[in-house]
Each structure stands twice: as C-alpha cells, then as structure tokens.
Length: 92
Image (cartoon, rainbow, N blue to C red; front, side):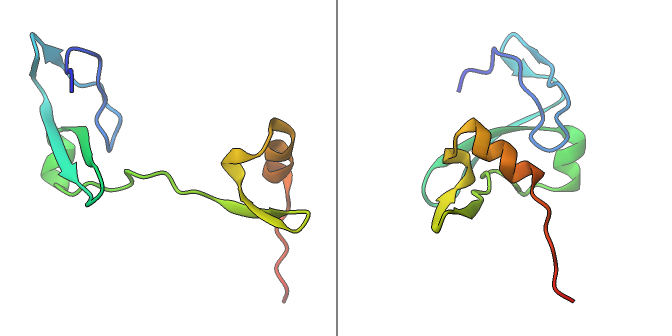
C-alpha cells in the first residue's frame, strides 16, 4: 500500500501525519480475515485502547420489494429513498 497519500485513523478518523513515507502519529497495520488481507491505519491513541480491527466490512442490508428479497445497495435511487422514509411498526 502506498502511504504517501493522506490517510485517516480507522477508528476515530483523525488525520494521520505522514512525512517522507513515515507515519508520525500511528501505525499501518495488516490484518488477515481469512479471505483477504486488510491494511488500515490506527493512531497511537486508538491502538493503545484496542489493537483489534473492528467494523471493517460493511453490513449488507436486505429488504423485500414486491415479494423479492434484494440487497438495498442494489436498488435504484427512488427505492433507496423510499426505504429511508419507511416507518417501522411494532406489534404490542
């Protein structure tokens, strides 16, 4: 991974200070999730709190539209807006 670009801490999203390819206020970490290798940056504060990598995969949300269960991210713009405006009712 090229660390000359601007980078953010994976946990707190704080800007990482990178100068001449060296990270001044944190670490670049490689994690293996069994399928792929994931490279992330963590600032020193977040790394001292937790060395674990959390929330690295986006959650895929499914919902039903006219009888078909589909991932919401594959819906067109109008259906996504409708999904955001839905009210959830709970039976008492």
